[in-house]
Length: 177
Image 1 (cartoon, one colour):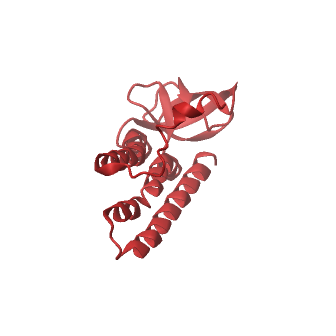
Image 2 (cartoon, one colour):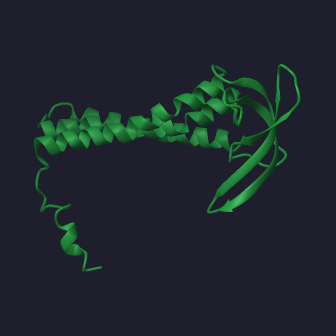
Image 3 (cartoon, rainbow, N blue to C red):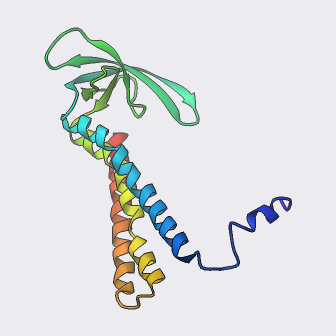
């Protein structure tokens, strides 16, 4: 381990300020990490709300354990419009034998949970991103040297972070219910 300590030196300078450019880069990275889950969730939210895809019913046929907590689930999707059931990939949080409302992707290869439970499950990652934004205003105020309002920024940060954690937990419970 001590062989690598000399390489770590440049990463952790002796308590120095990152400088104006470094601060801007850190804020942009922070924003990217917190906003990208929201961007990536748009398609799942569109499916869960019925804006895209075909509504119907999913019956989960099998779930294969891939190890390390990962599952590959297969099911049969029956469209509300009728027609023969078709084989699809089911969400990995399913269990064999589940029958639930689902939305078939426009590609026709996967069925995602629909309705309230699907929306709540799709909001899990955006809630994590939202919670991650909680203390960004405080950090910016601290770096800017602002003294007034930092207490309010800390309180707001705690509230936003708590709301993000609560949203994440609600989404996880919805996904696995």
